Image 1 (cartoon, rainbow, N blue to C red):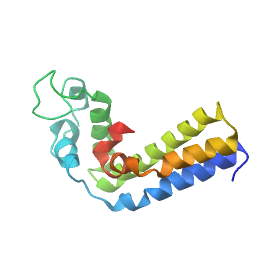
Image 2 (tube, rainbow, N blue to C red):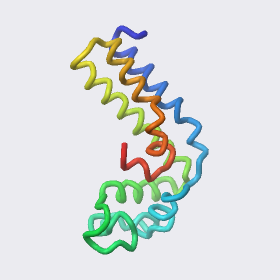
Image 3 (spheres, rainbow, N blue to C red):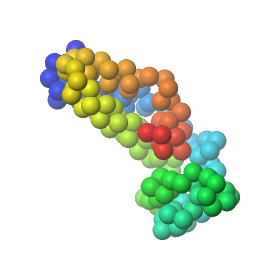
Image 4 (cartoon, helix red, strand yellow):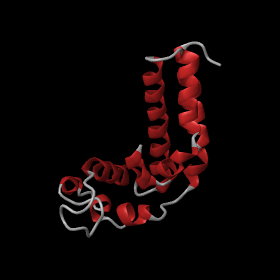
Amino acid sequence: MPTTLPRARVLLLFVAASVYANSLGNGFTFDDNWLIVENPVVTEGRVADASTAPYWRGARVGTGNYRPIMLSSFGLEWAAFDGSAFEFHVVSVLVHALVCLLVLALLTRFVSIPAAFLGALLFAVHPVHVEAVANVVGRAEL
């Protein structure tokens, strides 16, 4: 059990990333195809259109989710990674690990470092996060 914050951070990052390392080989699945692969806002680099486009393609304006930051980030990733699903999944795993660090930072304000580490560790490995990390589109929940 780490008793210093730097050690707790390193161990937490390692665990949070390791738990979802098996998702790196996933392709685009289910909603990933609809919202990323078949979305011209993402695939054609129309990042400026993300601020006016509904998150769900084909939804009438004002009836769907509005997530311009997610659509923009998907568009930038598509351009940077040439549409490779592997890198999208790497980003999702890294975002999950960073969120776990934020949980650790929050918990250290209220409890000891070992207790905060255990809480953040539980958060990192809890199965409720599988859909948010293993499917690219789930990143909006992170």
